[in-house]
Length: 395
Image (cartoon, rainbow, N blue to C red):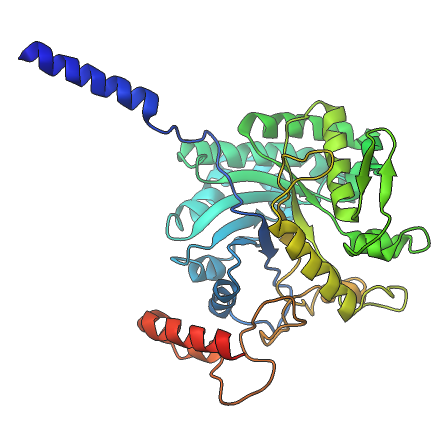
């Protein structure tokens, strides 16, 4: 009897070893293909609680913020929304030089909110390499390592992914896509960073704006190519690949630079892209119609869940910039007009989303903003579901 029992115990152990799913070694910070950036450089946008209501109604699950504001982290608690928080550039030097400060930051802004708030990523700095503060270039890798090591000591590396987003200023040339390489003065900082991210399974994050590319050279770029509209596109003679839209070409340019640097297998994720709906006199392409066209066509393109001509098996993933127009952002007028939603929570233009309130000003409809303000969302979830259903099918 004991022999039979031992046999079945061993058989069970073998079954457990060979057939139990193995958890991935690294966290994945992106579900699906579509996300959005939640910028808050404004004094007139809805509260974080109202933003949560808006995002859930829009069924947008992936959100990026640029800091670790606790009012936002608390509002996202228990929602199931997946959040990438930011370590602002101003913290990089401190985090790079002081491991204990990095640990304290992770404990206060990540560990203390898990698991109720689904923090699935930390963006360490934003557009550092290629930027004007050269001291930050040298601090970026150390900050990323110290934040990662803090997560590791807290056993959170299978939950939270480390990344950093780059602008196209890191590239020496991006046309045609196959010719793209990193700038000479960037390489000495980029390669060690890529090596570290390769070791921990992090993607290459790129902020890519066909709007900015077109605005910088409208005479030589077909606006239809930038807007995902019907066009002849471009042909890359080196790879024999055809591109019918600029975003795919920008992504493949990044893949070409990564391959040239020795990181052929690293995934590229678009952490910002969008189109301004209003601009200055020299930003003629910044119109409501163009913004609607770009963002609507981008949604359709991402919904196809397909890759690019150069990397057809790597499904394109992108975070749209942004939820709201941000009236306090510096720079040209376009910088303050990327929002899919107006400050009051209504839609800026129709690409298939519903706002916090009806844009038709029909007083017979109770707005989502009113529901949230009255506290029904948390006390009476069934009422909220019924009202959401009525709102969506009556607007």
